[in-house]
Image (tube, rainbow, N blue to C red; front, side):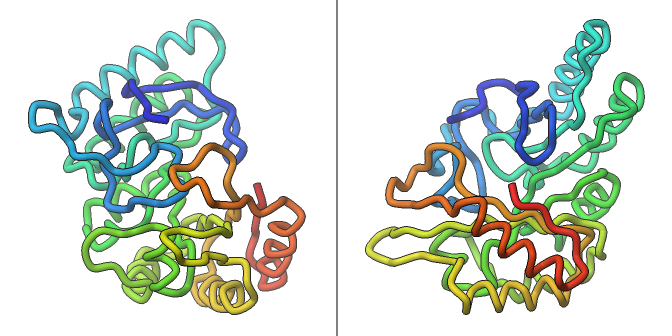
Length: 255
């Protein structure tokens, strides 16, 4: 499911409420430095040279201004403005400026709305990305496993990725973020995947205890996935994992 507009929704998000989405990535394909086997946008595609890789800062500002203005007139403002869309939003070269524009428009039209960013946390080494994420209300940063092998199976990251590197960057970022983890089980390319087994959960909990983020969000599959052999983890099991996070003194929601 690709998002074919810069601004989409609003939709009812099980995690965030009434959410107005912002897509900084191509409108014709997915562009991400992960290729998660559960991504609702499908697999990464070869991006055509004759199509733009990113939506421009000016186009994003214009589209968001027009949408929020209309929603204000209609008396139906969103709970949250959410950066997600067809890939990883923080790889946009003008991400910091777009966040600046978005906060100004939020303050103008919908001052009670939160600004959220769903990110895979791979760009935290860039100062401008850290600065931008520190300004939003909810920097929701992904870590799906404590083990490199599992991350490479589930998320299929491009380039040099290590859990140790991400943890180091999260330490530098500070505690004002939401740690988000997808729990699932199944099979991919002949490999069994299950990040709910005790060894996985125990190692992941150690990272949570070390980082002590503002809160943790655990969830599972809710929509069609490009890999058809995955299984959803039911709410009851997610709540048991969430209870173990809460026992550490860290707020946690299971959605």
